[in-house]
Figure 1 (cartoon, rainbow, N blue to C red):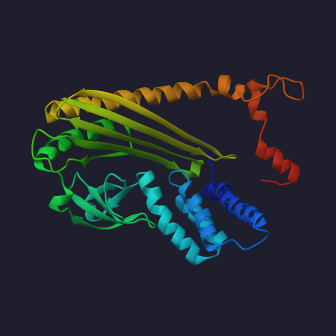
Figure 2 (cartoon, one colour):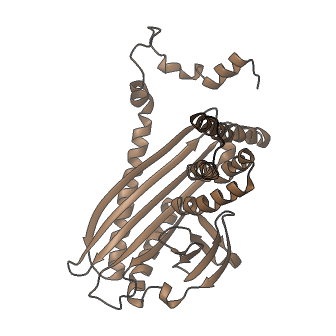
Length: 335
């Protein structure tokens, strides 16, 4: 990565984030044209603002929010859009928040949600009260008995959580995980089905180097007592945003399905963790192979063999081309 001063990195970051101003104003202008220059309604402004909130890359929603607030110049519209969009964004990106008094961390997700601002941390049996817009945990309370799984279900949840923690600590330097029971948590013993969900989330934020990235995986494990089978379904989502002299975003998704036999809590935990490890490692390897081939295959396929100039594109020396440099030259701008 290019070494730059903090002031320069802030300028570059703002240079990227300022398109929020441009696109929002353009969207409003286009809609105004369609409405014969009539004023945008309150709801139209709010929906446009929510779109920008919800489509912000991982770790960048607060930068986008700052620009939106300036562009809208309407505190009421901004506040309502933020109140509606931030909870959805936080749960979608499965952000981690530190609980007060060193109680640990809680993952904000739809699987741990008790109500609109309370989220269960099953590992510590505590409920975190969250301020979504500020993205902080304001306080915690002990979970009620009805919010926790039965002792029978907790045995399986606890064993799986321990194995997943071990895997995540080995594979994701800044990763967090949780195991929640989403079905059958009141079962007192064998004879009924139940479902656990494994959540793994990791972020690498480096705006000073013009790049941010995230990894999210959700694994649903359906414990089927009658057939003595565990049905495992996984969904992986990898996001990356690189914005030095450009704007490139990766949003890769992959679904998986597997199964194993219903065993003791410890044996099930080991089997499930090994399946998750196998699929995630394999998928990461496939991404690395795919992106190593981009210059030789994918990028070339995006162009004609001979462009309109009738000359071959110099793939061996692509650094001579820079859209930013050409625009600055054309406009007479200096760095």
